[in-house]
Image 1 (tube, rainbow, N blue to C red):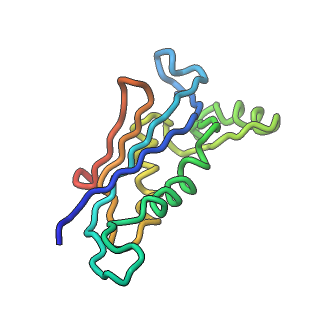
Image 2: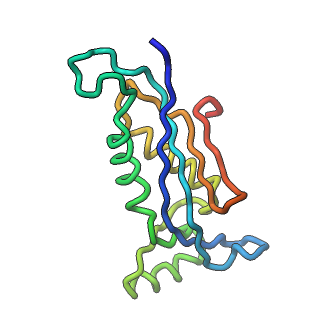
Length: 149
C-alpha cells in the first residue's frame, strides 16, 4: 500500500515577547499564526472500517491539534518563564489575561519544536508526524521535519 501525507491547516492569534532580543520583537506583540500539520501513513484497507481509504480522518487530526495547540495558544500571550517577563505575566494573569509560561524563548522556531512534541504524543501508533510549518507573517515561517530530528 502507498504511503500518503495528509495536511491540515489551522489559524490562531497569539502574543509574545522575546526577552533580551535586540529588535522590535522584545516588545509584547502578536501574530496571526498559520500552522500546517502533515502526518504520514497508509490508507486503511479494511473495507468494513468506517475510515476505509483514509490515512487519518481530518476531524481526528483536527481534534488533536485543537486540543494541544489551538485551544491553548489562541488569544494567549506567551512568555519565557525563565526571564523577568514572569513578573509581567503574573500582572496580566492577575488581571484575567490568558498567559502561557514556557521554558524556552517563544520564537517560531522553538514553538514549532514544542508543538511537534505535543502532537506526536497524541497520534495513533500507525500515523507519524511528518512535518509542521508555523507561519507568523505572510513571508516568515519555521518548519519542523521528522527526518531532521
